[in-house]
Image (cartoon, rainbow, N blue to C red; front, side, top):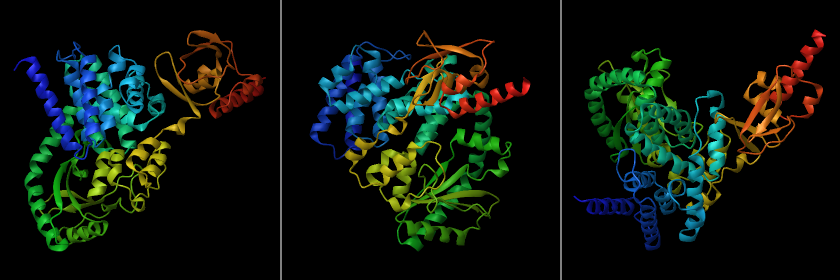
Length: 491
């Protein structure tokens, strides 16, 4: 097949997927996606991936397909097709605004900004980097788009140099997968972690894979028999056939659990689970009773995440039972709406709005997830929901870069001295000044978001009472007071 025929085949296949994933799409939106496709293809003409294949067909199109697989709409699909035009071609934000809806241009611009953020290995600032990631995005859809972009980049990691493979893989595990988790996108968490794992920690991957392969092989017959028995039992009890499938726990998730259990496989009960999707919440509890009548539950292993969801909104009933042949198998029971939300998180908003089932009580490490949950539970239309999906809970925070590219999260109004203490107490104690974007400034200088700040240390510098007037953060103020007290005692 020649290049032109191959490109047409890819386009035809893509629009077949669009029709399948967006069955109610209007002719106007279908035409909009078509224009975005042609525009991005022209913009990327002649560009190749590291694999040597055409950039647009081999990256932009797959990212758009992933966006569709995540249940997103035509606007985000267009943005996915166009997501690299600003960064990698001569196309500008203004060009996109003239050709497409403003929403699309802003999404592409947001993803371009995120492309500059890199994890440099400093775990001290990982949480700040995640927050910065979301803050810069401004619209959660940008984060979803960036996650789909990373998903495909991980699928093609084999074509990059080994050192770059590992950096991208570790960054994905440290930054992208936790973001997907906080947004409730369980399916994407597993995909990102499992694709990155072999490149991030190859030795650990091989060790975990060997154990997993052995366990799954040995348990296959047990799982198949239990699947058949559960199908019969639930049909007789509920009066219909619920969807039942088997799920093998992701290899990275299994590895983390194996680590916690000192690699003792006898203590891990959920490497393989049978999942039952029933019609209603009451059917969930009825099914649990039926299963416990057939198989003896393991004491202490019944978990009700319907009554008490996980912090990111995850809901399901989990029970672990003795199979009868010496094995222990986990069974999960949930409704279709719960399953959609557990797999796709925010992307499932259009069919999951029942506020009575969203009652997470644990404190969320990201405050903005509470805002997302409130929106998730609201009766907004899908269009209004996305309009309100802004991450402005960080509007009173600033994010400052170190020269190495780490991100430090500070309150608005923080100074160079606050930044110095946030980087490290000893750096703060001997701070003599700082360079903001290369220009020397005094310690009391207030900072603005996205500035690059380098602290100039002086071995003779030490905290004084004046320093208390130069900073606003608790860590800086408490460290200065402690140092001043020590100075007084030593006089």
